[in-house]
Length: 618
Image 1: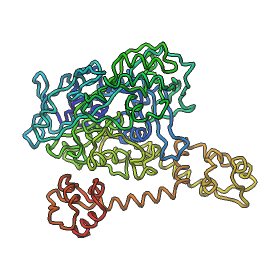
Image 2 (image 1 turned 60 degrees about the vertical axis):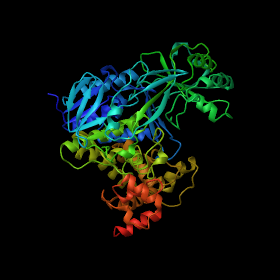
Image 3 (image 1 turned 180 degrees about the vertical axis):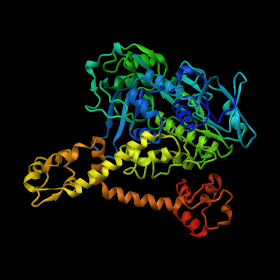
Image 4 (image 1 turned 30 degrees about the horizontal axis):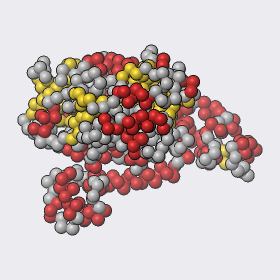
């Protein structure tokens, strides 16, 4: 009765994706959570996607995960960020209905007959020291499985700070998780502490939106999923306002009581999402900082004050926030706070997210030192996939840096580690022109289908899309346009006229010209009408960026040659006398599986890699 294929501990974004993936692939899954009412709860801002994070969401969807579909079903606003830049930077972002998002995830998991639920705190690991066997809960219930995925979020020994006040908790109003850290340390794992924070939530009825800048959604909103999720018909606006010197002066009055500055917090906070007190301390020369006013859903007045994350005393928060334009009469529902929690440095993991010390034990999400819903969700997905494959005695599923942002994230974690909350950015991906949000299905859906996660309908849609893209490319390369037909359009767009007939793909190479500009030209509109906007966009990107795309493909192939050179786990680096001392120490400590992984370890020089190439006979 208490035996399963996969046990997932924690039902946040990582846990939900892990449970869904393993169950969809045929495994019998037990999802253990401390509170059935907070499954997939958005602990911080009510939004999904964003720069690089939107690419991750589309990759999760392309593989057969659920975060994209659930985001589409529960969004209240959609924006494609960075449209003014190249397509490698385009990033979808949605404002979500917090409660609907959580409800939709729970319903999705409940509809899967392979998922069972149990509400209790997991406090201990059952193992023989080398192989996982199960978990034990706080009331002594034991569940057994050959694989366990830990997705503990901010709950392990979580400590909440508001000024000088401290109390245990995984998030406001919920108890901390205790026991697992001690159990894992007893097995030989190294742990650390990290910190994150959240802003006050306020009553939207008490705000004056007339003095703020409105931030509406896109006129033609997109979506995350490559499936036929319904388009967003109505949208709610967000708003922007700013702090000012008076706000900063009030916040500085609380610095002596700030856990950030008085030594109360030992954990390291996120570099790229600092608290407001950290911002005015580090950037003292700036007179204002942006505040994003974000609605929490369709049917609530609650507002998330993005940009005002703080752990200062509540009376300081109250006084300072009322000096922000539009917040003069604000009513606060909940104060901002900081939270410290345990994590386990991810250098202790394989690329599958299985731990090196205990076979069958996987870590995913903030336990690995990451921050963000999307980063957690993709780790949960990959851990759930690999736990399921291990139970089935199948080869592991690993994405490399040239295949997906997910591959970049996991490789960064297990190769370089992190001593601060890790957040994904487009700049972390060397091959981002290949890893665009628009082509995630082209890159990954077939892979998801082969492992049994993406379904038949997804593959049919992909095959149709591929076929249409090839056909449209043929049309553009076959059809010519005469000067008298196209020159008026070229002149209107500010680009030089042509003197003789040109193929349409050559016209499209001009940066001023979009595919929409030449639709209908030369009586070929019938040829365009059969293609979706998504297919047209894909073809346009391929033609305009063909040279860059081919160069990146060449770089990826060079990288993969190193990835194929295996280094056995018992390799003796001491016998390679030409290695640098730092290189030898790092290689012995991290035990990279391939030469490619070794090349990305901080402190490993190009000459160290050359020495290993020679020694390995390459």
